[in-house]
Length: 302
Image (tube, rainbow, N blue to C red; front, side, top):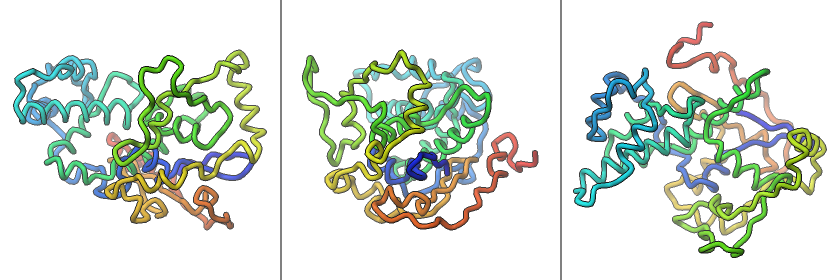
């Protein structure tokens, strides 16, 4: 778990934030191989998406993003149900690999996520995509906190939306009209709460002050500049049943699994975000050796 230290206490992105802002399910099947064979990538792409990529667009288990976009950008007018399904899975793979679980290459999509799309649609929907995305974000934030690291990967849209909801410093203005062709979608059963920022207007008031201004402002953060629980009651009510929010999964201390990445969700350290009094949190062992485990070094021996 990655906690953000502010003058008012600890805060972090939680499963509740992910469920409300993105509508990704936060409970279900773990996002992992499940014993699947991770090899023969070109054959797997051909079997699932119906197109065989040339050897030069695959490096290790990474597929060049530009090939995916160029190949599946336009659905044929006479597409049958099978073709529509393959194009839909290609689009989902793009969202997964380029948005939710993006790496620092910016033009590579990891094909291990495609193994999860080799299931019927009903089974694909059973994965806990939200918890996997949060675990992936925790790991990337932890890596970005190291000295001399200048890049970051992961679902940064979740981090951005969380910051806009909770921290008033740097929060953009939300407007309707003023040349907009249509009002922003209203959060509801089919629209995530985070979409309310679609028509945000970012201010350039402090652009000239640079990073130093925001660092100073965050160091001097006052109680009225941080919203512990910014979500209205209707935001909770609009979340569909399959998300896991109504089962109380967002309050659970559980591992967040995304293939080789395992992080821990510890809501007891940020009770203010649930409208509760924060006591002394119990000790937790996040086990640094977990960060040494990867698909290249599964034992984490170094």
